[in-house]
Amino acid sequence: MISVKATPAEHGAPLDGDDIVAHPDVTMNRAFTVDAAMSDVWPWIAQLGKQRAGWYFPRSVERFVPKKRRALRTVDARYQDLELGDVIPDYGGAEATFEVALIEPGQLIVYRSVRGRTSVGWAIKLTAVGVGRTRLHFRLKLGPVKRKRMAEIGGGFFDYVTILGLAAGLQERLRDSGRERATPTLEA
Image (cartoon, rainbow, N blue to C red):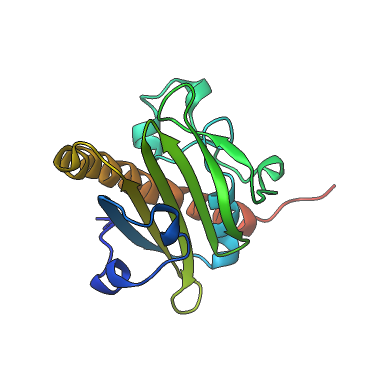
């Protein structure tokens, strides 16, 4: 079973982009580890998003999603040049977007957004943990939030489920792409 529970150290550690929402009412931390090097994981993270590679879910879940809305199962070069200031459409509504506020290619993306009167900061940090393993830490910060308890419970549940799906879908794609690289090809 996949766990997306951040460690106490991850909860307490400062993370680049924390200052985007300086006084958050809600902070959510999720994290998981995959058996792949950071250099193999980064291209998948760089291309995440609506009207890009989508949001990764495992095949068992995606079979219930219309084919045209399923996430990519390969790394696509069109989505690899993510830069500071790029605006990415988000699934939070027709007008919802995220702007790249900070990027350190290969290891960190920080997005910012405003939803009504609420500022949103979302950081994705990759860290090598041993040989060929990567820890992904996701931190979502919201403030001000009118209904804090609802955001913590309802939003927390939604965040947990989507990151859990991402973890499973990403691991599946990394495993499949590794298999593709390891498959010998016959040349004529």
